[in-house]
Image (cartoon, rainbow, N blue to C red; front, side, top):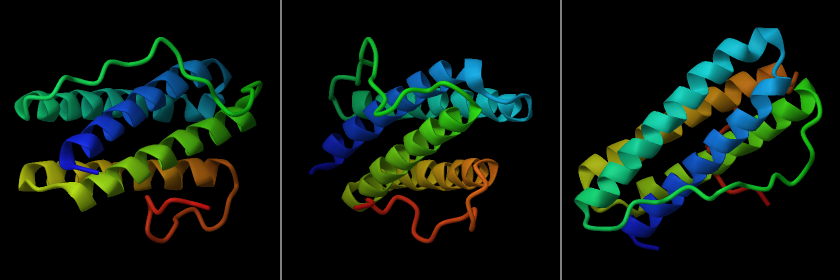
Length: 144
């Protein structure tokens, strides 16, 4: 995997996260609505920054798919949290790969900042789901 491949993968993960946040908005509990709004805005900003890095590298920007398929149906606030947690973990894996593959310091910083934000979001959603501990060691490590 090259730096540009990692940028493309991270941009696609961000687009999928934005889709997931949009889908789950209808099911979010009142206590979680502010976080949903804040986090979807953060994902849009990160996706745009990744696409700008791709453009600067002379690579085509990642175009979001028309839709994404979740591995399970979202029907209530608990399944919405599960979907959001999964989206954040997918982004974290992509950002960790970006940090590992980055040749450029600015791109590495983009990956590190994205991974840090995902770790915060993961902790929030784990706490909202009642999972303990709320934080995880080495966020972005692919899970088997």
